[in-house]
Length: 214
Image (cartoon, rainbow, N blue to C red; front, side, top):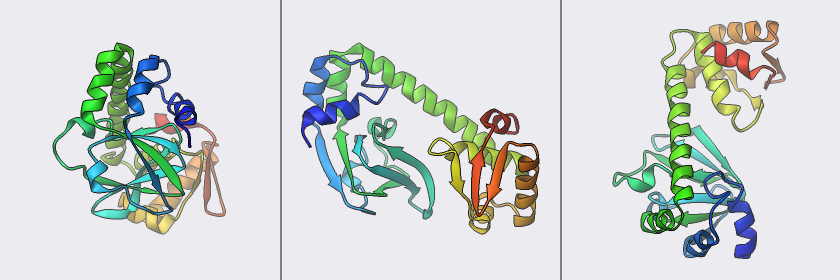
């Protein structure tokens, strides 16, 4: 893949969508890595900012790789916070299909900030949005009711798709709620036309309705 094509993919991300030409000259100094299906991102790149050029990556808790924490598709970035931290990341990444990513070191990122202040502002805005999102996520997982817990989970995974395959047995264990309670809430949400649930697939009809139940 040529870097000219990579530029188009990078511009899909809000951090770099309006950056100066010189920024791409610096980005060209980053590390481009290709990954096969289910290949893990090596530990030595966990302290870099990653930009998904093609394919898709999934983040997992190191202690429980069966639980997906987040998805990253073409144009998304990952590691935006950990790139400036010295401690080891608590999550790990693997490619869920054949993928390519560009990795930017902390020092190279600092150079880019010096060149283009718009990038540093966009970076700060991105991190602020992530803090807001994580605050909602924490609220969902400490929620006092099964309904708010499930709605918080559905809102989280809806960032990737509004059609969600749902394994009730696995989900009840992940969210630490009983299957009977889980099905009761699903039934209520269906009755209120917030979601549909058929053949193990949840389709979200009303995102605002989910948000109100957290």
